[in-house]
Length: 101
Image 1 (cartoon, helix red, strand yellow):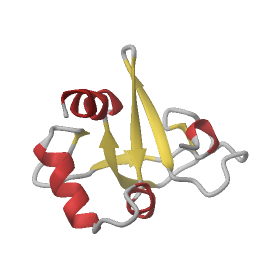
Image 2: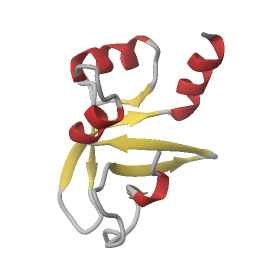
Image 3: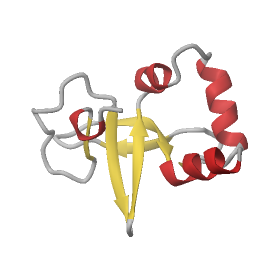
Image 4: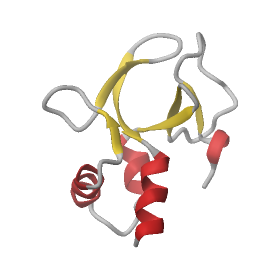
């Protein structure tokens, strides 16, 4: 819904100070943009549904594009330092599911 106003490039050297109320980051992989949601923003994006239910549904439909072994999230280094885990969402998979429904 908010696009670039809540997400910035995970590959940047420094954090983008213009992103207010950060929902996460995006990662460009080939011609595809993957969205990296933090826990709070995933809950916000699926408001009205429990986070565990949302995660199970994303896993069932293959929408989680990247995960670390044994987890449903992927660890990333953050621009400016540090690291954290994100739910990596492939928006093309969401569109595929919506069209087939």
